[in-house]
Image (cartoon, rainbow, N blue to C red; front, top):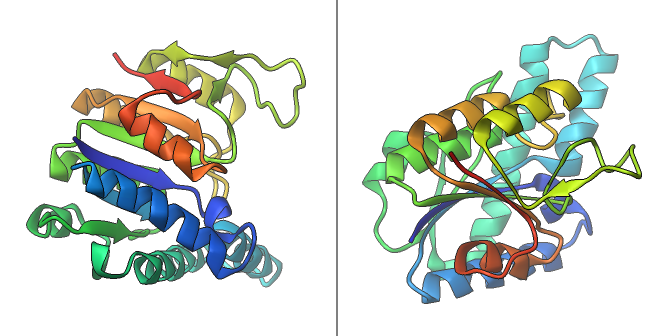
Length: 225
């Protein structure tokens, strides 16, 4: 199976040490051993949010804030490449054309590219470039809820929904801003819908849930149709 994974930066940077990167590298290696072709796009996480906050305080433009976030995604991508060792292509991929050219059995790792474009959207673009069978969105939330579960204790998680339903939920509940693409970027949803590529949302705080998103048995949310 060809899989494009949007790996939340908060997962990689939550412990601020090498162990997080090693844990996700182990899960990705398992998928590679099982014959899956992988592209992984890293988010910026805590470093991105910290630098964006400082940029706001300094009066930096939205574009400048995005550029700081992009650089943070590249740092995370390089650290994940280090953790993957010989299983990873050594380049940080930013463009779909690069992905299409370098699908050679190695795990490809990417980051952000253009201001105004999230890593979720980058994962969807890479899915298009590789002809992906699946997009996996791994964050610290266990799926798609009808409302933000971090602020609404009665939020209801859904096991499955359509792209149209997901777009409505995002539009009603999510603020799309630099460093704050909570849940999933709307542009990424629309591109995945055009591609007809299912998206699985899982709680990636357990790296094995990413494996289960691809191979079955996950407890997240599937979006299709």
